[in-house]
Length: 532
Image 1 (cartoon, one colour):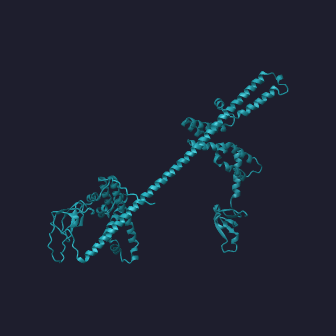
Image 2: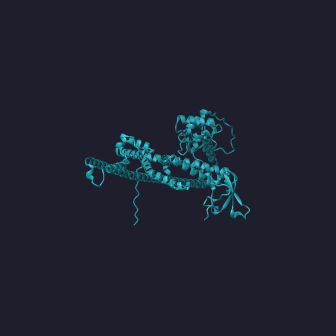
Image 3: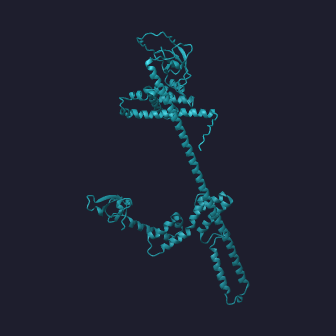
């Protein structure tokens, strides 16, 4: 059963509301710059001709009249020129109003950049008044001369005239100059607007309803003929609906963007947790391997001690008993020979105490490898960084537990690798392919097993490789096919008829009846032909 819960209202917080308002205006400015880029495409590509408009101005007046028409579009394009001319400093100009006082310097880029730098020096986040003051410092603006304009021949309306030099304040909050004072220095062009000059020298035509001047009597409202009243009301209503639509689209866009950002952050957190789990599991596996190695070393040490003790007991027994007491079982000389062989077998094992007394007589490389593994285990058990670094130096790896463990696993294959390679080299008629079939399994420890081989063995391997490379080179007379399995020529048969150095010319068998019989290829694009 579907139930509707009462809507929960939350108390508004100033910080959140203020941040939301600032983000909304920032988004509006961003969309305005995006609209400028689209307007430039419309003008430069003349796409308005497709709709039947004669020129760009007519398109702006017809389609964009609700957003200021051609006059507003010119202001935005002028701001775009300012941002492009100022270069890297353009990021500090947030909207068209801030770029407006800098437009007169756009033909002098150096002075324009100087004005922006002055504004940023005084205020890290400058406003339009800061840019206007900086532009006036770089290039002072001279007051405009009053031009004599002949009054139109219209009936005089008995309305109070605004005295010159009247100081007024912009009281309309939606106006870009809200809260700023200006001076009326020129006659009004009509009875519902005034020409106001501001401190930065800019002169604007402002409606009387947007001004607050109680001491100045002027007509506050514009009177329209009755036939235009209904049309004006419809335009205002349409404009209000358009503003509501844009506001709703902006809210939906901001919510979608925030949702996408939150989902992306959650995905990143999940991925990081999965990577952490994978690393932890690998570390656990490595720790278990180390424990197994330490346990096996302890068992070998215990068996070694038992064998040594047994040898000592046998030697003592042989020395204490006369030879005749052995009967026909064995002589004392045979017993000592047997003990000597046992000692030789045991000497192949590695004892740290014996290594501390004298250097090893054989298997020095194996001693060094086991010493590195032992140091690695000691570093793990004692948490000793110096032992870890020593193990890394001996084994030739990075001083990290994972790198040392990986290197130790590689070196464990070394005795088997040397044995297999020597076995294949000892075969009569050994070829490079025979050697490579075995050696490629131990490619990761090539330098290690190469150091274990004798000079004669390495020379033999080099000779086999050189002989193989000479036989494998594609030349004149070679029967070839294409090396790419996705080409139809992969199963075709051809013969190299000309050698051009890095390239060869091939005559294909199935092209004999065609007009094109040959083609040109690089050697690495071909392979030796093999019957299917």
